[in-house]
Length: 150
Image 1 (cartoon, helix red, strand yellow):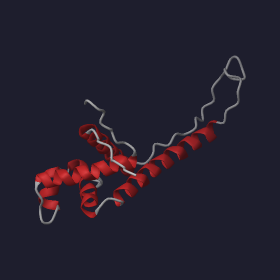
Image 2 (image 1 turned 135 degrees about the horizontal axis):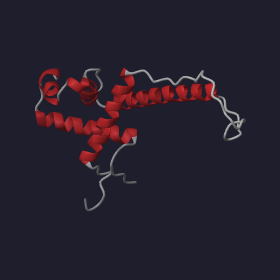
Image 3 (image 1 turned 90 degrees about the vertical axis):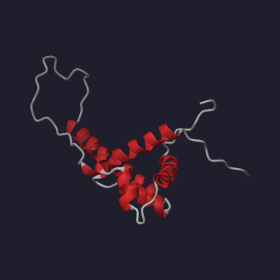
Image 4 (image 1 turned 30 degrees about the vertical axis):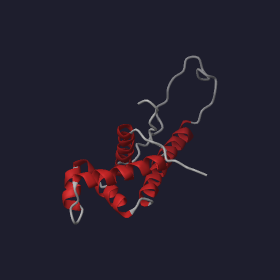
């Protein structure tokens, strides 16, 4: 049995992975915006409501709040598991460059020149980053497969 890994569109895949990592940082840094029930009574001239149905506003809001928090938590845990499966160098690069709280202010240059000890070249950094992105994209199911002829 022969198994080949797919050829990925590098730019589109890189964009998707960076978007997922940005979403991860956002979810880690902010609390979910919880909706609250309206406590103001509203007057309905017809009576029985427009749809003639009974709704429980408080329970639907509670469910929405719990679902949003659970979704964010699952997303963060899934991404963390995917990063933890990476080889040591790739994991280190992703954590230092993309998963720190101040990642938006850290440049690739700073990572390969100062964070890696000893420093590595820009070309080596790019190779390690692409390998990590490739694996993360496949693990997170966000890979953009290159179509023939493009």
